[in-house]
Each structure stands twice: as structure tokens, then as C-alpha cells.
Length: 291
Ligand code: ADP
Ligand code: BMX
Ligand code: ZN
Image 1: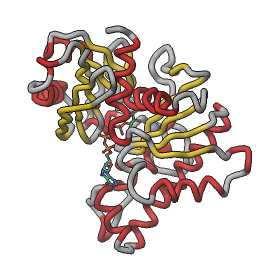
Image 2: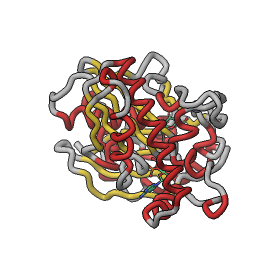
Image 3: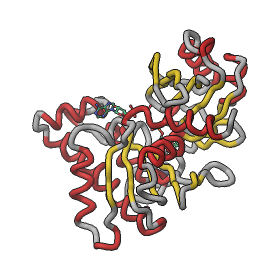
Image 4: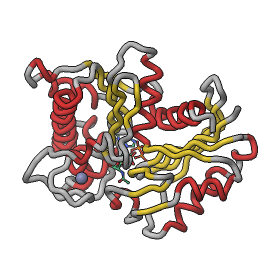
């Protein structure tokens, strides 16, 4: 059985074909359109999957946003150019004529990373530091999505009561400080207007402000990891997303976490499936559901 797996993030859309042995082929990417209206996302998804779907028997979607009854509901619409609502499953079923399943991107990635651990831990949490900060929980070997899809949205817990207002409406969320958007939004002077990838490049060239912005993100993420440990007693936290996987970032988070009391220490590791964790997690869930 071939699954067309799709990953919808705030910055990029990715798609690939995945076979039953989890081999991933014909990987394609394009930028996520920034538009309040659903038409632009629909057109971008259509163009992304057009060369792929004839070879697939089902569609598995990992997407940013709260996924409820196959529909994307943004908790932070700013990450999608203001788009707050998109009928994901309906759109992909119309485009491909295939049955489709949708799940939150970080929840999907948590499931793939739990699978990669092969039983080493029963309780783990996945965190993505990307356009936003997302999370997924596996508890006693089960993926926790919540009755309304909100479970694991750790990016919207408090990092700093005096921090910037988050696109979700709360002040000082971890996402507003630690995410790719949060890092670039705080850049000033010589770094004003730079995206986060560029800010990492400047940090490697000893730009002090760039290093400070990345450190502020790593510190907020380490605080979140201590909170997650306190709430879930998970045995392992896996980090993904382009910021989370950027060279040197996890080492900074580990240093910050090491300063927290012993009770909050937890094994930290980078995503085994790197940038493909969302695609493979969605494919694994479609296989489990026998879609
Ligand atoms: P998405 O949120 O669409 O899943 P990513 O995981 O690629 O996408 O996260 C996008 C964010 O990561 C952006 O803020 C971007 O500037 C930043 N980014 C992309 N590549 C890198 C990199 N190599 N190093 C650091 N940051 C990166
Ligand atoms: C936001 C939220 C989460 C998502 C997380 C990471 C939206 C649109 N998304 O907190 O559902 O899991 O970002 O998403 O409200 P990404 O785009 O960074 O991968
Ligand atoms: Zn928030």
C-alpha cells in the first residue's frame, strides 16, 4: 500500500510517497502561502500533490493547527498568514479522490518518534521548534490527541508574563519567544527583518545579538521541558523542527535544562526521522487505521 503523506507547516508544505516499510520517496516541498483565504492553500496543495497522488491509495496529513473532525483550526492564525480555518480532509479527498486522514503535525511526529524508540520508553513527548512551537504526547504507549485535538499544544504555555503577546491571544507564550517567528520578531538593528535561518548564520559568525536571541529561545524551551516533565513524568523528550534541529541548538537547551533541579531532568534527543517525522507519523497512523 502506498500512502501520500503531506506535512503542512507555517513555513513549508512537504509531500512524499511512503510504502509499508516506511521508505519515503518522491519528496517535494513548496512554501506555505500566506493568505487569509483558504483558496491559496488549496491551490498550493493541489500543485504539491499533482505529480504524486496517482501512485497512492490513501492520503495521510500532518498539519499545523488544532485538527478537529478533519478540519484545521489555527490556535495561532498568524503562523498561516491569518488563515484560521481550512477543511483539510475534504480538500485532499476532492483533489485526489482518495480517502484521507489528518492529525496535528507535532502529534504525528510524536507517534513516528515513539515508533523509532522501539519500546525503549512508554511515556515520551515530542516538541517541534519551527514556525511555531508544537508538541505531541505519547502516554503509556498511546498517542494523546484530546477530545478536541488540543492535547500537547505546549507552545501556548507561559514562558514570561511580561513577554510579547502571542498570536493565540495570550501574553508571553513559549511560542512567542522560542519559535522561528518569535526569534525573528525580536530581532532589531542590524538583524531587523532577518529570518531565523539567517539569524543562526549570524550567530555562527559571532554576532552577539543573534547569539542572545537563540539563547533566549533555548532558555524558554528548557523551561518548557522542565514543566512538561513535571506534568507528565515522561522518560524522554525528542526535539524536531528546523530551529530545534539547527546545529548547536539542542546543546544550548541541554545546558539550560541542566541548571534546573534534579526532579525536572529528562533524556533529550534530536528527532530520529529529522524533518520527516510528521510525514512518517501520519503515514503510520493511516496504516494503523487501515484507511
Ligand atoms: P514548518 O514550520 O513549516 O514545519 P520548519 O520546521 O522548517 O517549517 O521551521 C521554519 C522556521 O525554521 C523558520 O523560522 C525558518 O527561518 C527556520 N529555519 C529553517 N531552516 C533553518 C536552519 N537551517 N537553521 C535555523 N533555523 C532554520
Ligand atoms: C502552533 C499551532 C500548532 C502547531 C505548532 C507548530 C497553528 C496554526 N499551529 O502552535 O498546532 O503544532 O504551531 O507548527 O495554530 P509549525 O508550523 O511550526 O510546524
Ligand atoms: Zn500562544
